[in-house]
Image (cartoon, rainbow, N blue to C red; front, side, top):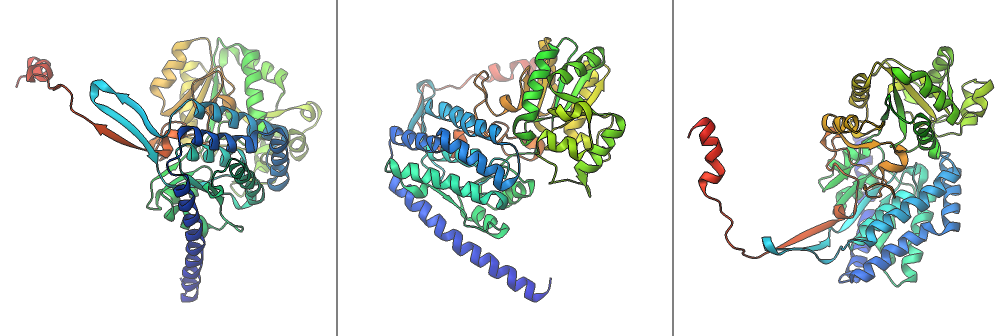
Length: 477
């Protein structure tokens, strides 16, 4: 690297670190002012953050602003996301303790105390410029932490408006506004990396480059992986129910969610009937020629075409040159047989394009799903529509994924639902299978340090024979 380039880079790093140092100082001051807050006070602050986005007029305004600023998704879905995710997260957080004694286990002589982790750096994506920052802020403040948002540069205006709404609501209840802050515009890679290095905990949702940078920041980091969800339609599935759920999930926010179905794998026995059900639900099955056109336009130079992703179905139909029934379609199905780098349809698409695989039977469907995830999305999730519980259990036992959803609209169930037990979140850990540090939905426990008070109990020491006896009998001493 030329010397002048090195000097320029060092100056940029120094400027970013000075700017970040001020944000960190303000965050620590706010935490100091909020130290010792009771559970009720913490819960009031969390509720204030939730209301700042859940409020109907704000949810609508920020949804409209998000689509205007980023060009991604659609307004109605973002209103739903702003409210549903916030409401569900608030439900989860109001049911748990996050300060002082949170658990006592007398028989083990243990008492657990929750304490803050410190200043949280939260990197958020352009696809969820309001819901994700509020979701993370609620979880962070629940533990008495401060949070600094590093938004996608594309989404800075709307995320800044979201942060301002949170700060206004905190001020209204007398809580320190600086518990929630945002990187100043323009958001640069240098500033984001400097924030990661200065914070006490880093949480990243979005770019896998940012996830890797978080893990190399030298600070504890939680990154989440890429999605590329395959969903199996089994031979005994309720086809119309499955199709309706797949459609609702696929078209939500124009398929910007990492939990959106990217591939559907249909067992041969009911293939034609399932395609018919998906068509009734709003799908359009592209011909071979149309499928090639879709691929050629969706990928440009080996990368997803930003002019096409996350757009409305009518925009895609025109762009793909589709006519007739396609003009009224809600999503577009393209049949595929291959998986891997030479078959782009086997990758995540961030668009209303659904890849369709035909499987010989459930075993073959399981194989296809596994190979799709091995290509992209390993660890994230898979879905199945079936009446055969053993098939769902087999997927859970054998596949390297964190979540297996059964008979659910994947987008709505994967990040928490009111009819399932997963906690509400906008950040899904994928385990070590995708290089993540968590194999669960990001939740409030990830924002707590726990002190263990340990007292003596009656001795719990078994005899040697109890532990080694079986081994000695089978293998000798």
